[in-house]
Image 1 (cartoon, helix red, strand yellow):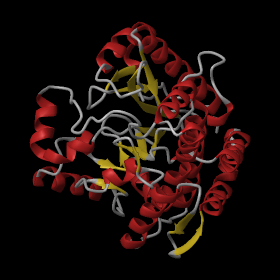
Image 2 (cartoon, rainbow, N blue to C red):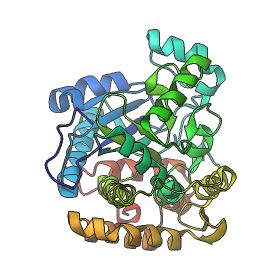
Image 3 (cartoon, rainbow, N blue to C red):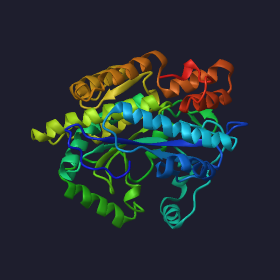
Image 4 (cartoon, rainbow, N blue to C red):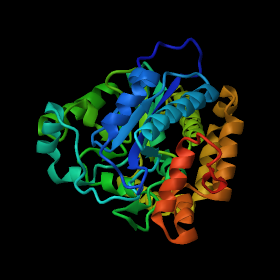
Length: 383
């Protein structure tokens, strides 16, 4: 999300960063050709497209948006631009949290001084770094308020993960998980939900300790699923696999913004947020990553096992007043209705594979729905 200007509206601006895999057009395997696609897409997208940590991934970035419809249009245009660029080079892009085809372990990494520091710091952890997420930025210039809003958002992270689970495959096999990307992150020294903080000063002190201990290369490697942006006046929510479609990413951002607005009201009333048991939150992450929306999740405040659809509905109900205020209620409700019918991204990936027993069909359908440039898009992968 490029630099924002403080909005005069009580409804904060939002922006999205999406990551994609580059795959061969011939066999569907991930391809280390990201730099080529970025160069071809840059005339259309400028600095809204760039590379990622591996040479198989690209990232697109929106401008700050006030409405979900404007955000969705930017996401759609960026996906179409990079898909056209890829096709011109006999490549494609797919929106999946993990590779479907291609044995690339360890993955080919981009090169540079920062990457060298990362390799020296994280070593074998980089073997599993080929994963794609969506990052949602919500405008909040007051860093103390932002930290307290994050305290409230922590309890929703597992449910947001379940809604967007879209990485069932790894090394050309079904992992049995809906979000294998999430499991790969759990081994990193700074990942998952952040601690409970009472102020920006306490947050900054924790980051300073991590830097001093060598657990971070720089502020860009604070891989918590909720963090304060080091360069923008935003809260960044990083828990989700990249969704299959632009519409899903827009709906996710709208829901997160509404949850942040709801949390902001509680903060303004003196509520610093719930102090959740770390073991229960970790358990909830694991269950959400395993089941996605097709099974059960853990209700973090109570520790009870609840259908994932029930947890999602409760979260949406909590956010509904803010969704209605922003005009996003219908968009989010339609998304959730479609998820109930067609399943999360992992379920749709598996359904594509099951029809003929071919993972290549998964890649084809992901490519078609990542950026549906023509009538080739099929109904089976729609949210």
